[in-house]
Length: 70
Image (tube, rainbow, N blue to C red; front, side, top):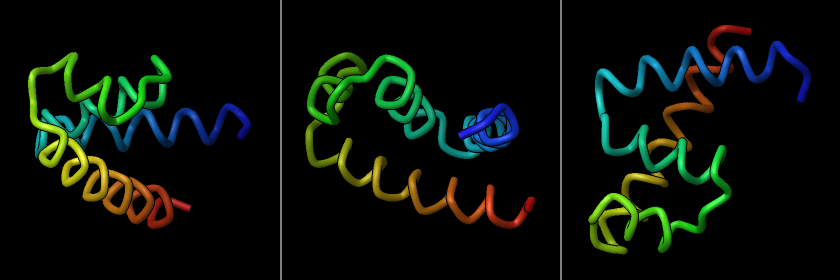
């Protein structure tokens, strides 16, 4: 969890923002604000089910993106 990890995450989130802005916003709220999926969903006005779909997709996409950069 050093600086390289956070830089890679930030770069991947920037890329995700162009593809799936709602998913990226949900990730930011979860990771940087520490919100639960339910609280993040309420903060951006999406349903709990949609938030869980975005969260699942974003986690997998970000992990693949970060691993491909290593």
